[in-house]
Image (cartoon, rainbow, N blue to C red; front, top):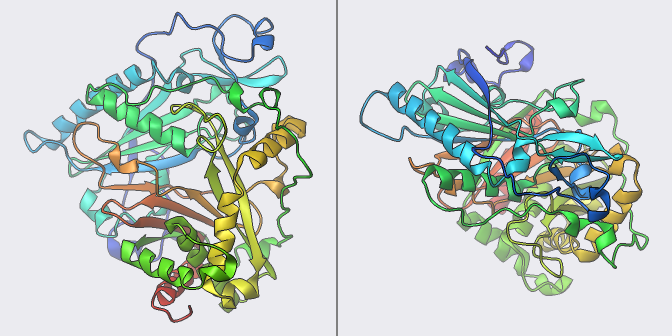
Length: 486
């Protein structure tokens, strides 16, 4: 049994005891490796042709610099919650049948997504994925709680959510021993299921992760894949582009913030926020009312939501006297359809880059809302093809093809916006219906905002901040929506 966070030491959220969460336990019942149903015997070595002769026999997946820069980063961990899929029979019987079907369909989808069953290895001085079919880790567990307990708090992520997904990488464990994907299916007392997934960031970005999950679900429904994965990643190498130059490009360096300034209030918790479409419309109306002043004709849902969250965080920090003179927010951009020629639709790997919108605390707190939304808009637009090639070139010249700690997007004083409300997370139907909720486990970084589409429209937001600060941010956000500050 994995140890769960205890109330002592602030590990449990405030109010957990009153809400019935303090006695929750997650017990592992089975751990195994699910391997592809059949090997891809007709495949040749994957990778750049000039390296092919140097590789030992086997199938090796070449990795671009956008893959390699995430080595050592925590795995991406998400959880999908499902109701019992059949009203007939005992709940445990349906759960056991569903788990057998999940294993079988996972083995079948791995025939197409075979790099997910491999391991990360060093070869000819560069990491590759050795597609040796060692398999995806598959864990079966039980949690002594019903879905109704979680849904009563709108599936707000809590510390024990981390027990619903394996956490990787493990300290001091060589990468070639770690699975690139871990799946945990947790049986709930009511007959429902929680499916936790943990993906190596070297293997896949968010777009690719949800491509995998929807393909797995299609196999479970005995349907053909709507998109066949494309595994050749050489398209994103500097050798294949005439545009590969840094052109003076550099990454912003995070402010030097002391540890006491990072988290002085309490341990980090998650606060859940559902943003309705009517809220977004009000934000867009406010931002667009003076858009000519910044030359903008259109703000996206993403632009205005990130701007409003940024404003709420900065105001909350100022009230707690935690503000810095400079503040930034990191946004991500999917490059699959922004390069010429476009990457194949099924490109499986990392094709996401980032940029920062930066400003002063005073401007974000007191400045016109359309100016802040404009900064987000420009940061998103800056995730373009020249920036992609500049980042790839910079990574090619960097030690181990990685940014140093001060230039990674998810460190320092910057607020990090991760995931996307455009991901098709609620399409993952294994044959017993769409998930009731999709959430994330606790993140390891200091100030993260995780976005998902809402199950019935709108956008779901998970705010990971120190306890009192998170509560203050939530309160200020609602006041901003009510035009108290705009």
